Image 1 (cartoon, rainbow, N blue to C red):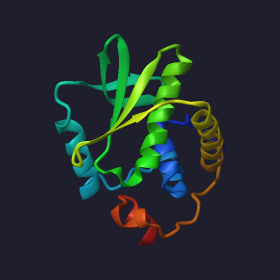
Image 2: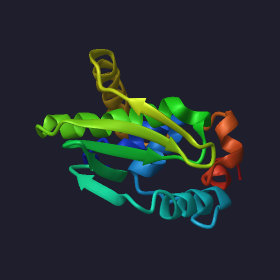
Image 3: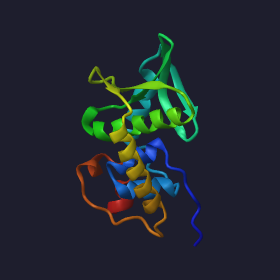
Amino acid sequence: MEYVMVPVTGTLIWYYYICQREVWLIGHQITPDQSDSNISLGRYIHENSYDRERKELVIGHSKMDVFRVSNGELVVGEVKKSSKYSQSARMQLAFYLMELQDRGIKARGELRFPQEKKLEEVVLDENILEELGRASQAITQILSLQRPPEPKKINFCKNCAYAEFCWA
């Protein structure tokens, strides 16, 4: 079987910090259950939050949820239904900021949790850049595997749209 290079994306970064099996599944275009209630809720929150801001800025392999220009500065936001996985969300948004920086675009990041009425600023620094480098390498290794990593029962499993795939 020939391996086709899949680019590291913000979505893969997000899942890397939650479930490495899911990284493999998404990277190999195995689609989760689209009727899953968590996917539907996430889609609803994304579509119905922050109506006054522009939605979906696509640059390279990144698709940022919302964006605006404030005092001449680009502000990109990632909208999540819960802050429960804020580390994953923070690294996903940092990946987007890195993609922008690599293209010479200075931007500021905001994690947004509309149901919790929370906003968290994300700043790209050397530590985060190093961590993103390590995560990107690990993701590339996961994607190159012939088969997905074995499933591991974690807290995320109960809300996962791949649950049937892993545990049926």
